[in-house]
Length: 443
Image 1 (cartoon, helix red, strand yellow):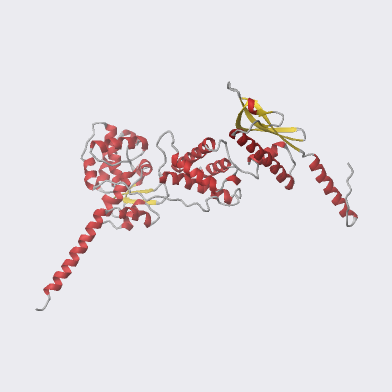
Image 2 (spheres, one colour):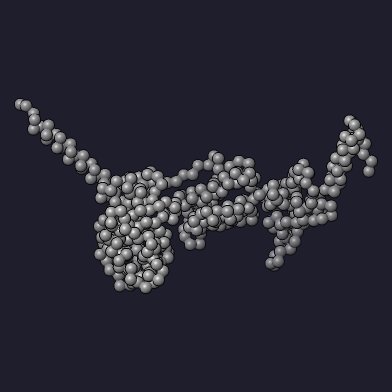
């Protein structure tokens, strides 16, 4: 082929310009793109056909499924489009046009970037699986792989739950396996939120508001990671606001705690789980922190009394807890048990699921009409055991291992009894002042 090109400048510059033009010409010649749509019969017995896109560049092909089916009688093999004007056929044809345009746009982008053009690269760019087009599942996989060593197993378990929810949304609602990150916009976020509110994992009912917001919060953290990695140009959550509802922390009153303490269970596992729960009520420790207690954590404090020196697993905050007599009684009760001595632990161990299941039975037996979980013990320590008995909120915050006082203040807000007592003290003081004032009146 003869090319007539006008060159300017000295001879070295002319040769360089000629080289660039020839290279560009060869790229265009070797990157001619052909896009057609083909069909294949489904394996199951049906008259439907599955639609595929076939990309051909320089004689080499790449194909991918469009996740669309069409009756064989409705496919025009000559025009490579659906036949007829029904609503579904019209929708399929519009989708084919979008795919056709998208593949040519991917081809244009690769040419502009100076890439060697292949059918595989065009397919990858269109599907968002190349280096310039990361997908949502790419981001999730990267996050989970890199955070596995820095986040606690319980936290990672929640991220895996969100990942399952996202995959189910993509498959059930969007009819796709994955989505390019550049299509992760505000519309996707709001649609996903509505899906999450209806989402029902096999083990539980649908998400309440705060459960849905937790899924959204985790996706938001991952999208921000995508921005920092420069996989996303902007954060799709920029205009989305997480809306958590305030909830009252469930705790036991002094009377309810006494009922449990005074009840003895014949079944040894139930009795031991009752003791673990009471121990947590008098120490404020969470399940994972009680589970991790070893003999080495029991020390003599500066005051000569028994203390627990440990760390809060969730935040790695150091914990220094003086042991109340009832907590120490439970340690003494189990210190000679063989399985505890061998494991160098302080208390019996059971799974969180078994403990919570047994606590429900204990609540029913004690006629306590509250949803009791092991974490109820931590709330009970903060309210009925400490704050209600005049322990300053700053001390309670330290005992709980909170990093912010505002976290502990949540417990103070629910103590109506404490509010009533404080106001009664104020009334007594005011009455005393009035009485004193009246005693000195001159008539």
